[in-house]
Image (cartoon, rainbow, N blue to C red):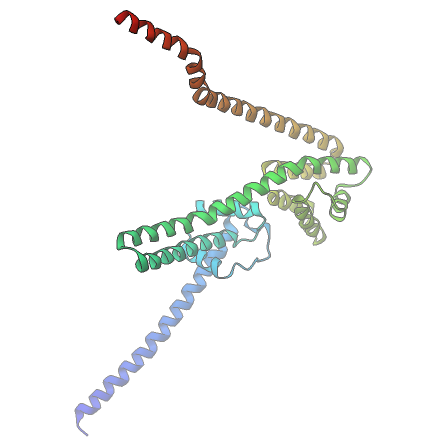
Length: 308
């Protein structure tokens, strides 16, 4: 055999060895990058102010993976976290799930619009359909979940005064705060439809030995309204310092009622201003026409006679 053949064999073998070593190094680097990304995601979850409000994983799956790979904005994660907490999801991956749903919906609707446009219309219309589909997919999931969160917060705001009255009644009858919560969980309360689910988690946290302070803090965060956090802080303070719970509940109930009355007065004032503007825009012109129309008509007829 000629030396050229052996040189060619050597080059081929060297290429195969380099390909094997390079692929092995590449696979190792990709694996390490994936592990580093997962570690950074976990550290980001822990660093958020109350990301451990619920340890169990809801199983975000594909959408959560997409969200973790594409979302890095701290403000966006904080906003999505508040939305998901308000609709009842407390796991650390919930904001990434919403980010993934938003991105996947935007890309899917953009592709659908692109396909429909290429099948039936011109290129300009196709681009408009793709952009419109992307915008709809990007905005609608966040808007829909925000509407759900706002509706849940309103239900909790309506149910919270009834909860305080029930707790005040049970505490005055001699029950402790834990016994009062357990009674509300076991009994059917028509006025506590949304809050009752959070009370179930509160009692579960107490049964797991998390302590009253941690359990009540987690419960206040689950309520997702400012009054709920204030109420949980009041209960923690009362349990920590041994203050009289009956008087504290009565004062907080009166304060909450006063806040609702002030909010109702403010809303009524805004509605009155809006109604005044509507009346001026839509009722005053016809009224002026009805009142001043005959006089103006007679005036015009008088000028016409004088001119003739």
